[in-house]
Length: 88
Image (cartoon, rainbow, N blue to C red):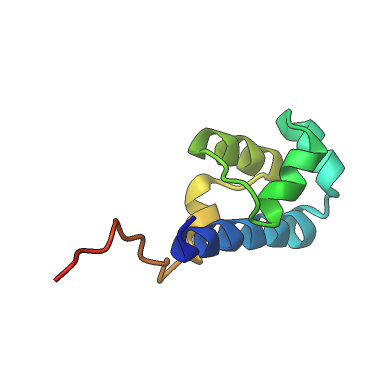
């Protein structure tokens, strides 16, 4: 998988962990149950090991009491995702 995509997954996971611990004060298990997911899935998302769809992020944000817009607000300079490199 492309390094930039992995970086983006980790950034999303870091943001989820930040909101979970500082804003909501929840454990991964409580967040997972509130959003209707398995705790191991939340763990994988926070570690950047798996991607979360917008629907999934929306459910997690709802359980945290934040909007998707607030979730993505700190991403002022998101990593640029590129397609296959062109040969010259």
